[in-house]
Structures are given as C-alpha cells and as structure tokens.
Length: 200
Image (cartoon, rainbow, N blue to C red; front, side, top):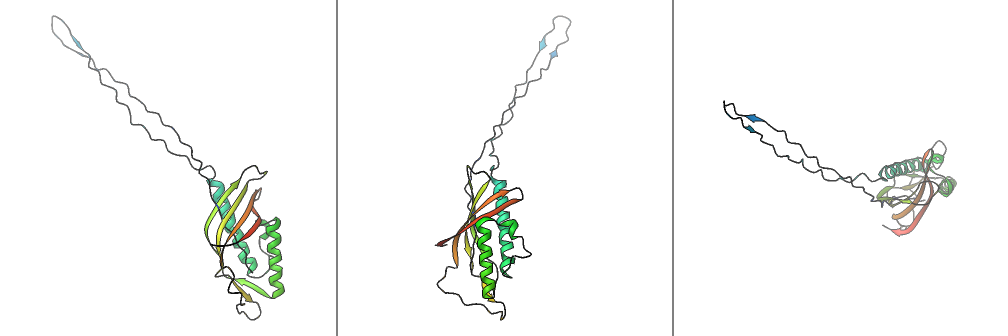
C-alpha cells in the first residue's frame, strides 16, 4: 500500500526598514593674538561631515516561522506513519496527535487492510521539492503541503515469511501528494491528504 505527503511554499512578503543619516556639529576653536596694541581673534570652524547612510535591509518573511512549524509537523507526521505502517497498527503511536479528519480515517483504513493481508511496510519514504502555502480566510491557520514522494524504498513485507510482497511493476514510485494541515492549540495537524495521479 502506498501513501504520500509534500510542501508548497509561496510567500515572499518583505518589508524594508529605512535608515536616517546623522550629521555632526562643528566645534569652534578660538584663537587670539597677544600684542600690546590691537587684539585679533581667529575663529576657525570645522566643517560638518555626515555619517554614511545605512542601506535599508529587508525584514524576515512574516510567514517564515509558520512555515518552519509546518515543515516540522510534516516530518513528525511521517515519522509517526513510518512507525505505524511498520507494524500495520497505530496503537502506541501518536497518529491521533498528528492526523485528524479524512487523513486519520484513511490511514486507519490502510492499516486495517495491511493487518488483514498479514503485511507490514518497511523502509522510509523519500521527499523532495516540498513546499508550503497558506490559505487565507480560514477560521484556523491552514497550510497546504505539496511534495514529490518517492516510495521506492517503501516495501510491503509478509509478516510471517519476512519476504517482500510483489507489487505491480507499472505502479507509480514517484508521485505528487497534497496535504492540508490546520494549526490547533496542540500544534499543526494534518486533516486531509490527496495523492495526485501524477509522476514527479
């Protein structure tokens, strides 16, 4: 059985901070001549020299922190799935903490199918081109994660014999998946996962 996940990042909001230049004031130096007749005062003035301007620098992306959180949650999600599929059972894992809604239901359904077939999944899924995007106008912060999943090293194994189960050769081994996650009080939770019938 196969499952998948990825991230889509498209946020480039930068703010520029302006910098002001400061000018220095001149200090007047008074000089005088000492003669018995007339006294002349010399008042040389130092010219003011402005300090160099500070070039404006862009501020950090305001969504960068959220994006980092989503990526960390995505990695944890896959870590939990790897543990659950390795024994075809979510018992003793944190699946309920990292997934909810249709994402949780589908994973439990897949795990039940594995148990019924007497199989487990070994190895790890590889991810590439992971990107995170954010949806506006949602009650909760919502992220859409898109990536290219490579399940080449994810093997179906017979629990009794320990032998790899032969799967159709024409199946996609690298494909695009799209997940939706919401930020709950406990953190980011994956609520939906869609496997795209598209190679990557």
